Image 1: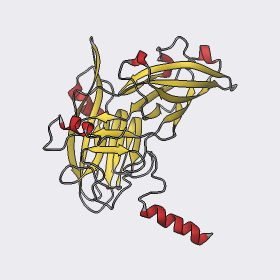
Image 2 (image 1 turned 180 degrees about the vertical axis):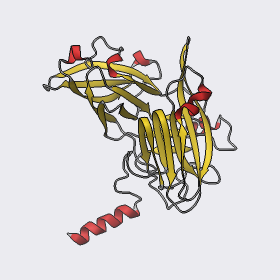
Image 3 (image 1 turned 120 degrees about the vertical axis):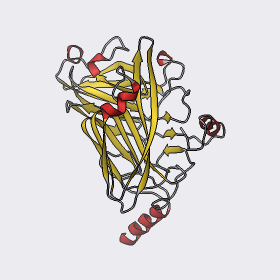
Image 4 (image 1 turned 90 degrees about the vertical axis):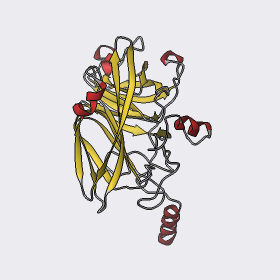
Length: 311
């Protein structure tokens, strides 16, 4: 049995599989780092004894009288060997104006051509509130390019897979929830942002199940679950739940009530202020596209036309 086990391990290693890296992680090192709904300080470190270039995008919802838009800008920097650096979320959100929500930040390792590459030596976190996750690159050796330049597939083949859903333990009327839809098109500024309906199946502490609570989410969401108002009855509220504590299973749904572009999406979720806990469930692919240094914005559309994006 021992020989068969080790032969199986060798076969998986040869195929590019990495144990513990099949899904997003809040504790493992990776080549792609995601910070969502950040209110505080984010930090990132490189534990490899060589420099690495980091491509990053900062995204936030900007609110106005006409509604809101999901806006983003890019930045790049280099981490030297064994270096750690940090960024203040208020400074990162400043370009969006006073009416912007908490920013989200995506960072990944790139080579000299700005193509994403394997560098599973990045780690990060948040000092304050927000949600953090990392994804490992699953192909090649350290420093090798992964997939098609400008297109990051979190599919369990190129990078760790995203989540299909989440389980939430909450305090009625008090839990604040962050939700980040993980399909991002940073290459095309005119692309419609990811939109979905988040559907919650809810149980109270007496294991009584409630259905029908949901809300629309575009790009990112962060607020008290008691404020969900897309449905007639909100069972996150104590007056409807009947107990102080509850549990919910969250999933996404394509629903016309959330707009013509509504679709099922992979997402990252987390609870604020310690009043609750969240665990990701299942797997679903998510794709991030971004512009290469010499590439016009229209190039993202070209990659889509030739089927280089995997949703």
